[in-house]
Image (cartoon, rainbow, N blue to C red; front, side):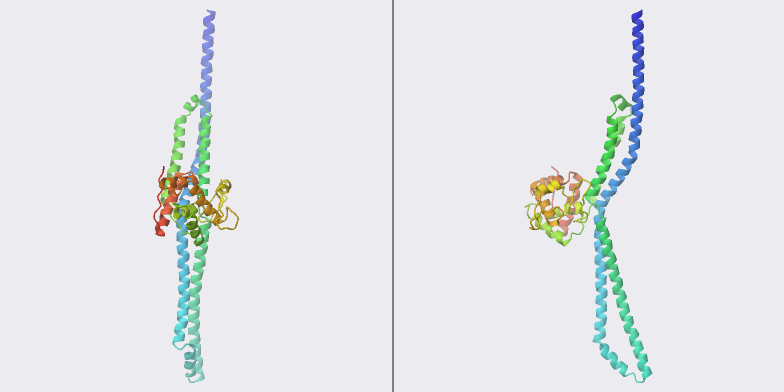
Length: 358
C-alpha cells in the first residue's frame, strides 16, 4: 500500500509539473507573440521606406531627364529672345536706322511738329527696347529656374546606397522577429503558432524582393555628363568585351554619375561607390597623375572597369551577369543595371549588351 501511495503521489507531482510547464510555455508563447506583433509596425514602416527608395532609384532618373529637358527648353527660349532683339535692331538699321529717323525729324517743319515726332519716335524705340528686354529677361529667368530645379533634382537623386540602407533596416527588423521566435522551445513555438508567424516574415521578404524586381523593370537611363561619358568609354576599352554602357549604367545606379558620392551606410564611397579595401585591391590611376584616389572620377571609373574585368565581365553574357552581381550582390541590381545599359546603348547606336544569369 505504501508503494502504491508513493507511486500515486509521484504521478500527481509529475502531472502538476507538466501542467506548470505547459502554463509557462503558454506564457512564453504569449510574450513572444506580443513582441513579434509589436515589431510588425516597424516592419511596415521599414517596408514602406524600402519601396519608396526603390521607386526613387528608378524614378529619380526620370525626374533628372525632365529637369534636363526643362533647362534646355528655357535656354533655347532665352536664345530665341536674344535673337529676336538683334533682329529688331537690324531691321531698324536696314530701314535707315537712326539716320532715317534724324532725316524724318528734320523734315518735320515747325518746332512743335519736330518735338511731337521726336516724342513719338522715342516712345517707339523705348517700347521696342523694353519689350525685347522683358522677353529676354523672362526667358533668362526661366532658364535659371530650370537650372536650379535640375541641380535640386541631382542633389536629391536616390542611389543604390539609399536602397541598400532601407533594405538593411527592413531586414534587421525581420531578423529581430525571427530571433524572438528562436528563443522559444518547441512546445512554446507550437503554442505561439511560430510557423504562421514565420510564414508572415517570409512573405514580407518575398514582397521586398518583388518590389525590387518591379523597380528594376521601371528604371530609365538618364543623361551622362560629357566628362563622364569619355571616362566610361575609355575605361571600358581597357577590358575587351566589357560594353561601356554597362559601366555607365553602374555609374548612374551607384551615384548618379557622381551626384551622390557617399560615404554610404556600408562605408562605400566615391563616384563608383567602392569600399576602401576593394578599391585598394583594384585601384587604377585613371588620369595618370600618380595618385589613385577613390573620389576622383577618372580613378574610380577605371578602377571599376578593372574590378569588373577581373571578375570576368568581358567573358560573355553569363560572365557579365556574374561580374555585375559581384559588384553588388543582388539580382534586382543586375537587372536594373542591364535595363539602363540597354537604353544607353540604344541611344548611342551601340549593340544592346546581354547578361544571363548562371
